[in-house]
Amino acid sequence: MTAFLIRRLFQAIIVLVATSVIVFTGVFAIGDPLEILLPADASMAEREQVAESLGLNDPLPAQYVRFVTDAVQGDFGRSFVYNRPATEVILERLPATLELTFTALVISLVIGIPLGLWAGVAAGSATDETIMTGSILGFSLPNFWQGMMLIMIFSVTLGWLPSTGRGETGSLFGIETSFATWDGLKHLLLPAINLALAQTALVIRLTRTGVQETMPLDFVKFARARGISSPRILFVHVMKNILIPIITVIGIEFGSLVAFAVVTETIFAWPGIGKLIIDSINALDRPIIVSYILIVVTMFIVINFCVDALYSLLDPRIRVSAQ
Amino acid sequence: MMAFPTYLHGQSLSARALRGLLGSRKATVALAVCILLIGAAMLAPVLAPQNPYDLAQIDFFDSKLPPLSGGSTGITYWLGTDTQGRDMLSAMMYGLRTSLGVGLVSGFFALAVGTSLGLIAAYTGGRLDSLIMRFVDLMLGFPTILVALMILVVFGQGTWKVILALVFVQWAYFARAVRAAALVESSRDYVEAARCLGLSAPRILFFQILPNCLPPLIVIATIQVASAIAAEATLSFLGIGLPITEPSLGLLIANGYQVLLAGVYWMSVFPGLLLLILVFSINLVGDRLRETLNPRLVQ
Image (spheres, chains in turn purple, cyan):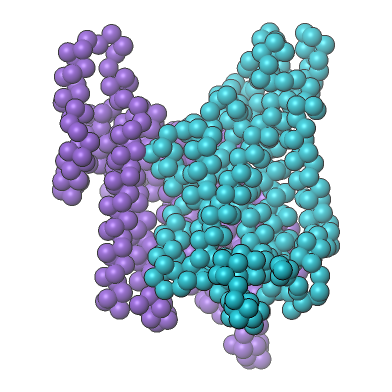
């Protein structure tokens, strides 16, 4: 077990180092940040001075070594645009993204699980067919377009909900969040629905499969024989068994929601890390791009590592086959 | 001699797939829509009322006309015009061409790369196998959009770079499926027989084992083409995908987004609907193919 975990940890570090080298080289190859940072009429001396202060004159390997030495100490460099530490800029925007992701996750569970249960119980019926076709429609809907349609319908035509920004945040248990104010909640609703849609389709599929696999099992038959009511069997006995795989997948999917927030945040001008990365790509703000990618990749490595560890704990075959 | 796959029912694979598709009304309609859209995309230069790339045919004074309005040259703009006075219907047909082209080309390369690596992994086993599969696990652990974004940031933009990014995020699905199927197949008698006949390893792999791994591959290829089209549209919308010179549906929608709040809905609603219909029908076909070709469900 320990050997297995150490090997995985070692692999994770290799992936992180490889990503940092590739991203650093690649980001370095695109464009010249001086073009964007300096006014068009800047003199050569000014250019030279800024390039020197940003360390752009050093050879690439030297820049990389300096980057890694600093990164290990938690310093990812200063943003060219904000002139503040890149990590600080990213971490400052992280709560907005997490709030959005979390709300989307809750919406997808609240809508997805009941629909999945319904489709699973009524497998083969017209209801099942409709729900499943709906879920295919759900993950076929281009996320960005669906967001635009939400804006068009609910903000432009009906004027019910605001279309951009995060709105007012309030303090709840000492955390700045949109949940605390009515205005914040109104701003949160459309982006959260936008992000939740594809996820809902996934939850429906998972729940339906779970129900279909669990219903024929013996314990369900025995529960019936004991005269337990159908709703109780479904919501208590079956539910307990299908929640485990759903929660596992949702845990993994939380990460991809953070990644997909890039699209949602761009459409709704939500001030999270997704919008930040797109803005930074356009502004060639290298420190932000590199630190965003490394932070998100690290997040994924940690999530995947935890899932691997959990699985190997539950299923000894994985441990054996990995040796 | 090539070993053509014969199945439980003694039917060819294509006949089984087609019969499965036609057996469901929903899938039949979806297939018809797919064929229609592919036809429209291929014949766009002939069918489109206007060549959206030909500046001589575009009248700037016709810009932002709503659907069904008549243009100054007597042309009817069925779906309205964009900010430069282009006919939306024509622009969408050419956009469909680009979107489908990118989706099919990247799907093809992902299939080729993934299948080869999956077959090699299954056949050689050992260290190479675990190395390839670790890489597959790694790829599948990261969301498509993040990896594609990283690749485009690193390599810059352009049509072939978008295709490269899509291939890079999709090959792993093919590799995993083909490896699993090939592992089952390589323990069968016909592979043993082929080995005894002294056939070379590549020949056994590609002409004996591969044809029998086709059912899961076809299903994944269908679904991956749909997801490639959607991913390309998303990347183009974010401004890190295709160049403006060859607007795909995603780019058309992005242009429409600029004027959506001003009430010019047709520039984003129609290309979006077309994209949705395209991706939805390919996915419906894929879903039906999975139901009919899945060997676990056949018995």
